[in-house]
Image (tube, rainbow, N blue to C red):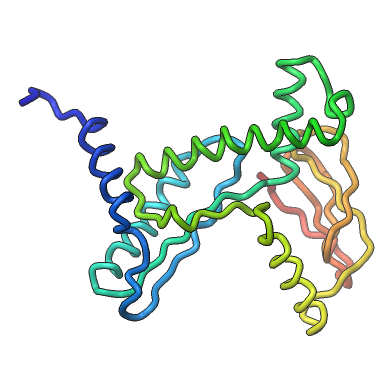
Length: 214
C-alpha cells in the first residue's frame, strides 16, 4: 500500500466505471427530477465559480437519485459567439500573424470549431475530474444541428404570443475594450461607457441604466 493517497489513480478509475455503467443516466422509474447545467462558455476552462455551483447541483441530483427519483443532470456547453470569436482571432493573430479576413469565412469558422473541441474537451475533463454525475450520453452544444432551430422556434412563438417584441436598434459592446461594434439585437440597446461599464437603453424607457458587465 502506498504511504500517501494517490487520487489520480483511484478517482479516475472509479469515475470511468460509474460512467461506463450508466449510473448517471435516468433510471426510467420514479418521479422526474432534472437540472440543466448552466452551460459554461467554450472560451477557456472552468473557474472556482463553476466549481461552486456545480458542486451544489451535483449534491442536489445525487440526493434526489438516492431518493429513487428519475433524475437527469443535463450536460452542455455554450458557444459564447462574440467572446469566442475574439479569442480565436487573437489566437490566430499570435500564432499565424493573420486576421479572420485573411483566412476567409470558411477557414475562420473551421478555426473556431477546432477551438471548441479543445476548450470544450478541457471543460468536460474538469467536470469529470470533479466527479460530477452528469449524463454525458445526452451532452449538447448550443450550435448542434437542430438545437439552434429549437431556440428560433421558441423566439417566434414568444413573438407570435406578443410576449416579446422586435425593434431595430443598435447594440455596441466593450468585450475587449476596443471601439464599439454594431450588432442587431432584440429588445435592448447598449452603449459603451468605459471598459466593463455599459449604459443599457431599454425601448420605451427614457433614462438609460448603467451596469457593470463582465
